[in-house]
Length: 206
Image 1 (spheres, rainbow, N blue to C red):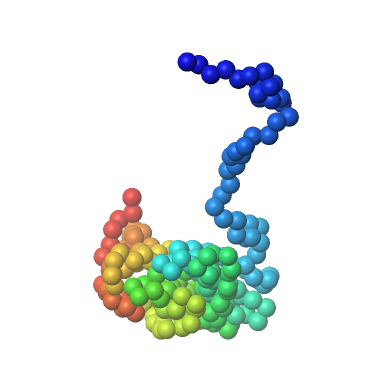
Image 2 (image 1 turned 90 degrees about the vertical axis):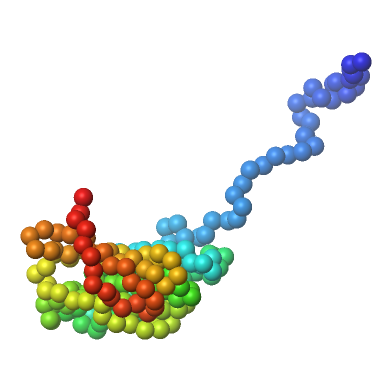
């Protein structure tokens, strides 16, 4: 048997000013990080080549080049967040104190155990060399170790390095370097950390 509203209930349902018993709303799970359009630091000198990775702790980790500043210093800015990704903390890694050495680019990856690996390219005009360097820091930016991976003549075509973790204590490093009469991507897979460079293989660029 069908149910029929009585006149009073029908009139109430037709009333356009009535309010629903259940209100459905849609929103994001958490507030936006107050970052859009905001500078990470207050410095006014050049900053470039930013790279960002998510860390296994939940943090975001960022690395970018800076300088030369007003004193001729240059290096890497390493920035990390809290696990909730609500606060950004910058760490200055000053590498050179004169304009004859400039950081060209930096790549970042998480190492086995949670430390951060930074691989960067330096334009050394004093020695007329490109230097491929590495630096290991904790997730909060404390220095663990550093070393030179390789160097070659300033006259050789070189492009930015890129590093990525492959698995436990295994990493992939790729950078561009002129080989003979052509430009090629040099690919190196190295193990353990802090890593030492092995003899790189070559793969022709597509």
